[in-house]
Figure 1 (cartoon, one colour):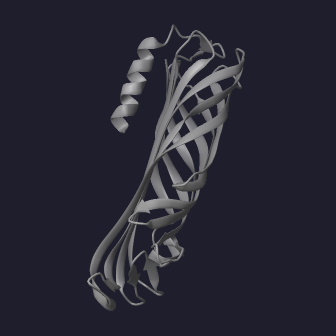
Figure 2 (cartoon, one colour):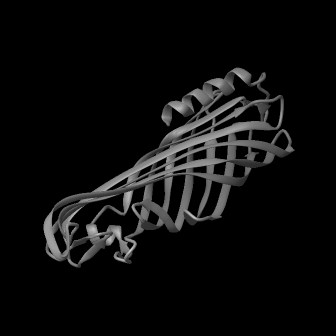
Length: 280
């Protein structure tokens, strides 16, 4: 997916027209922010079998997975017409794991990880975004726009340790053995949003965005909300530094995981970041 973003940037760059200067001094054909954010994360997960086995549990609390994580983020914009039309894109990837002796039973689909067992848990998430954006208001110092695009959501959950489950060859018998159970979700999520770019001074730019989508179909029921604010200071015409705050709220009440299993996720990421800015 990272290579797809790179191809998108290259292709859009070739079609972009000669850059104007935003707020007198900052070129606006291509804007790229890349850096890292220190994120606070909360995760509620359940995997339920067709028989109803499974219960929601707090990943950070049960498995002692860090509730904060440093992760890389990248955001970009390419102008594709003389004015008003842009392609936006972005990427964030967060990977966490933890190991602990359980203080309570955990039912994960068909598998029961009992109190006192040593379990390793993993939770990975990735968000890749691309969208078309159009300025409703396009002035020298302020631009307000609407966008329509897609976020590719990629999530993976895994538990490894000793667990009890029903013998598939004899439903009356239970087996206890070492297992490595993993489930994953990959979904394209349409997103609609609003953006604002505001040049406070010749070299100081405030940027905000909000994106949202809600879906309820046979295979998935949930919502995704993303918002952020960034203050960029361009110490040179093409280079700058920025600080920002971003938040992602994902709530999936019901998603098919295969084999009749259903998943539920309540996932929130928020954090402050430091970024290096490029403008061409």
